[in-house]
Image 1 (cartoon, rainbow, N blue to C red):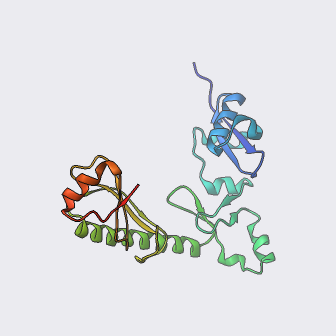
Image 2 (cartoon, rainbow, N blue to C red; image 1 turned 60 degrees about the horizontal axis):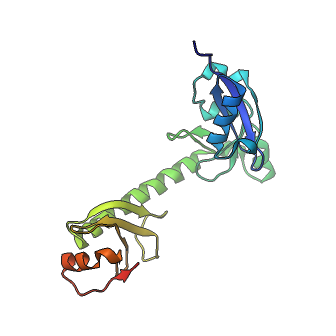
Image 3 (cartoon, one colour; image 1 turned 30 degrees about the vertical axis):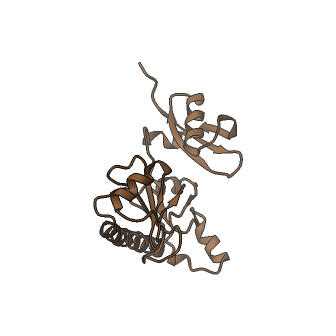
Length: 210
């Protein structure tokens, strides 16, 4: 018969980040904390029982619950530390605490305010619209190609900034992925696929070779 899961809280040695995990013993808990924080076993400064969280096993624990128990969590948008002591910190910074009411996010994080929640939504919406526009431009320029990955940097509009809007794709007859950035005259094609690329595009070889 397996042992019941109990809550443990751990903290790393360097950044001051922590996590609550559920485990049947201390060694297992320490491993889980290290995994959750992305560090090694020896990088965990402490790992101890937190019986106040036992009722939430097997997890996860909602971020607002952690905050109510004295934890801080970074705002998903501006990275401000959201905690039960945030109001005092805001006053020190000359800000009105009434403008900062923490709220959970759909992704399991937390926003420090309605303003950050709205800003995050607008940026995400802008990126989605830009991705749709980039996909439309790409499909018109490279009909028959299949998109592997579409990268849209933060910002709602397509620009000529290098690296901000990049499509990785495959084409008929090619063995490897091809990279094309919005605004670029050239594509980046594997040396192995140069002949197949030129045959597919029926163009003079005006590509950049890796």
